Amino acid sequence: MNYRISIILSLMIISVSLSGCTGNQSEIDDKNSEISELEERIENLELEITNKQLESWQEGYNEATNNSQYNIQLSYDQGYLDGLDEGSLDSDEALALAYEQGYQDGLSNSDSYTYNDLMNSYDQGFIDGGEYMNNSNSDEDLALAYEQGYIDGILDGVTVSTLDTIMDRGYLICGVKESQYGMGYYNYETGERSGLDISYCKAIASAIGLDSETDIEYVQASGTNRFDLLLDGTIDVLIRTTTWTTSRDTSLDADFGAINFYDGQGILINTDDLSNVTSALQLDGASICVASGSTSAGNIADFFNENNMDYVEVDTWNDGADFRDGYCDAVTGDLSSLVSMKWQFEEEGSVDFEMAIMPEIISKEPLASVTRDHDSEWNEIVSWVWYGMITAEELGITSNNYQNADTSNPAIYRLLNSNLGLGTDSNPLANTWFQNVLEAVGNYGEAYDDAFCDGTYDGYSGSDDMSGCLMSRSGTLNALVSEGGLQYSPPMR
Image 1 (cartoon, rainbow, N blue to C red):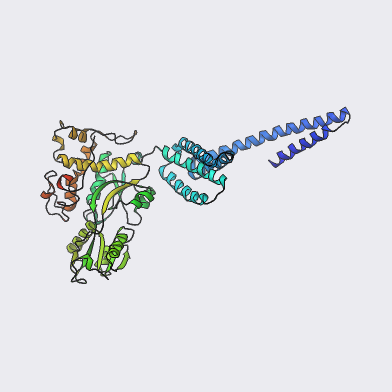
Image 2 (spheres, helix red, strand yellow):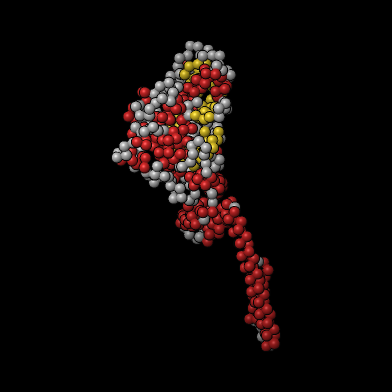
């Protein structure tokens, strides 16, 4: 490029010289000949430059189709140049125009990316964007606006649903717990899994046409890594006693689905250490085990602060084991977890002290399924599978009677014989998708009975008829609305 500029300058000098020259015609002809030669050399150089640019652009394009990070950088560079071109506009107008151009370009390139690649690029762009926004340089602001528009356009144009990915793969990957009887429990002796969360995973697999026994990979998700497993694509859905909170919903690129269990935080104490304690309000000075990465830590801190008490927090990866081994006077967590913990310790005979659960419930803990943001078709399926299980119990439809159900009732017909628009264009749910769910796990009452009770519930006569329950459903928030609880489904129509 510098050589080309030198030639152009030479022409300009020659032209200036000629303009003041009064030499003879022979000298002029010689100069004109030199000019012609220079012009020919310029044309050849321009052709060579063009060819090299084309080769460079082709190499960049080939690399970009296989490298999402390169494309993001390329979009930034192009956005930067476009921003310079628009620098004469009003600042707000220029930023809006740069964003819109980036958005449209992003939409047109959306098919080249996987969801996880896009999220990683978007996250990095967001961090870099925060740094750029602290710089008042208008050119960089324009470039940032273009880049953010480009990535947002790609995200909005992405057509690959997790459902399509699952169906191409041939199995569902479900993030679960393995240590909590009643919710997510793995028996290492038998290799069997049980619990309400496990039934939910099976119901989802059945709904999309997979085998609920063979087509699910369960991944153990801890309190600290569960959202990482979801966001990096290791799991398709998180169903692991996960509380739905504002910060998790807004800050973790997570989209919560149906609430499959209404829980609350409680406190389980060692009554040998705390022999006269019958209320959480008597726990001033106690040491309390709290699971790392849970909402329990903040809740217990708030409770003690509000009641002008002090405590010693024992932050631990395994709150139950540390409580069992005497590292703390009490343990706090979801009530369902504490009930399970107490039952297991007593069944195993693994503790040599008496235990009691305090009567106070110190927080709301709505436990819900979780999918990734920007994946609405998949989230709809995950949510409506659960709502279908509730609707079935409301209608008295069970695993034992659905084949003979009265489908002259429009609500029953829709439940058993319509896909209700669920699924993607490539993988719509079958019209009989919910029959598959009933065959695999039954309705909500049946799933609850299998998880917490003796397995004899008929699925329609009400939670008062459940027996042998580790954690009673009758009179709790997990009863149907018709029984005074909170479990309720939007209309399935």
